[in-house]
Image 1 (cartoon, rainbow, N blue to C red):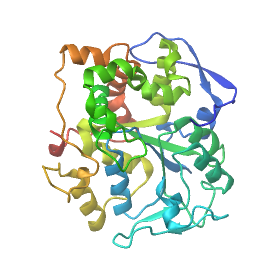
Image 2 (cartoon, rainbow, N blue to C red):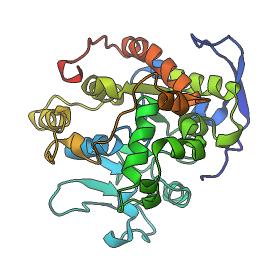
Image 3 (tube, one colour):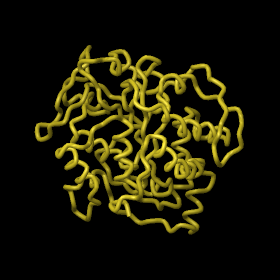
Image 4 (cartoon, rainbow, N blue to C red):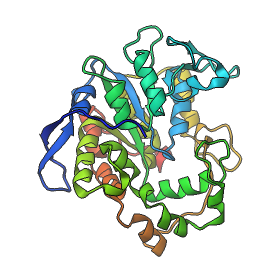
Length: 333
């Protein structure tokens, strides 16, 4: 876990549509270090909040393909021999791809603090085009500040689908540090009974609070953070969401080369398809039927489900706020 934020909160009034208006304490770091969704174009560094099993690898590959320089976990991998440098270095980690990274790891506590010490976000040469991390509070508190603000976007998926994918993926993914081969010897039902904290991963990360002590007040705070500070994308409206991310982050996707990258992303992979960008880290697995006993178990006491329902509500409104009012893409149907 990343260090807890010690910033004094600021009192705000919530205007969430499916919750009562009440006084909410929004952390100062979030208020001052992040650009509001409604703010429009200004000085910022894009920050992709990576929620596990929500197409994060595919999205990173897309932005690599589009020529952006990323700060994620790749640059500090010891095998590339830049992890102990005392200054920032931009380099291409793979010979077969013209993809660039900065020599930091923005996905761990130690890596985030090292990136802060090296001045990742304020650096002009090398310059990071996109910060990627699942550690929302730590990145906001330590990498961004009032002068060097972040602009956040994130892809969201129904929490039941995310949990299914996580369970089946990590029992096979022996290349992941979070590999759990023992999960293959249990059922999703039994796993869900013993891994209840996974149900509230999003709220836990947004409010920086222990997953087992979350309350409805924390849900309301999470809603307010999402509403004001995160441009939301829906995996069910994948291509449309990617275009929103590009418009919001000031990424020009009009060139023939970048359109080719998006076309690859847009193609839904079939079995054995390794060319489609969306094939990255995808893994066919059984689907839980909505309304079934297992579905009810996976949604029981889930604040993430309530947060996701709110995200679906504000999706169209946010599109209008950034000047987009796009109907569902044919690729998303």
